[in-house]
Length: 404
Image 1 (cartoon, rainbow, N blue to C red):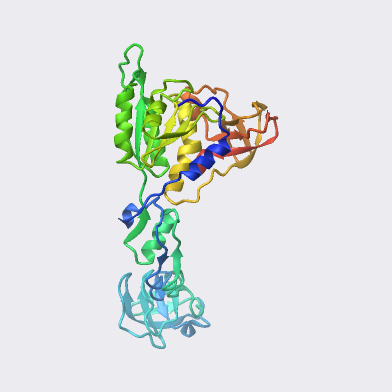
Image 2 (cartoon, helix red, strand yellow):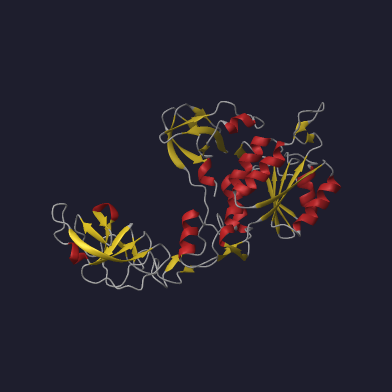
């Protein structure tokens, strides 16, 4: 299939949205839930903490027994028990009594405050309290964090370490999450070989296979890469079989906008190519299609172009496939240099940004991997702009903002 006109980036996103697929839920152990997306609300099964507990190492007391205490006039209390973390005491704290207590241990009956250990002097079975405490001082009350029955996490929440902590505190050892998209990565190219210290004449290390594997993982997917020769039958057979086994197929190579492109023609013969050629720099030969209801992203063989195409389109699709409300969210930075651009295309320029400014990377070739290593962002120049002046604010898409 050959398209002579380049599609605007906004129209490419519209086609992706119209053909968006989603993964189904599965239940995983809490230890495996990091960076997964919740498929259910989480309701706390009990108060957290489930009991009044000590916030300090010290002594559980009746606060009124310490009123007026000072180094020159300490209160003397009798120690009747000791409680470690995870233990409970059957002793009630009466007037003039104290129970030694560890941080996190339940407050014994009768006590309403904890005196920090550094404000006491121990003498056998007695302590002298050197400063007063108020009722509830150094006590974490039951339900201080979460009340039983409260919704603590919502469906479609991305689980960071803090959400994992909340789920555990709410009483969950397993969570229902959306499945990671399974992605078949097909790298084509007769010239590509495995990286090694011995490179044959005319061959190139296959960086795309490892790059796409890492990019898919950075978008929450599970990649299964394979390298194939530039052979129509071989590529077609792999795409056809992969369409029934994987959620998404991503290919590199064989997408140049000309007749006879191996990958694009294979997809066109098996299903439908929905776009081929986008007004995007770098990476205009990007294509997208469907084979047996399975989305296929056809990326360039040039490493940098493939990375940009992935970040702009495939990453967007994969994150939304996991039920995340994902959009590329650009921030504003002041550009340190003048940047030229042609109207009618959207530029994603490699750049280095700090908190205030952004500077474009000078090396811009689609095969210059070093330019990506020296970047932490894209300067995004809309198709309606003819460039950016030095000192002008511009849209910047930070790499870190795209990684879950």
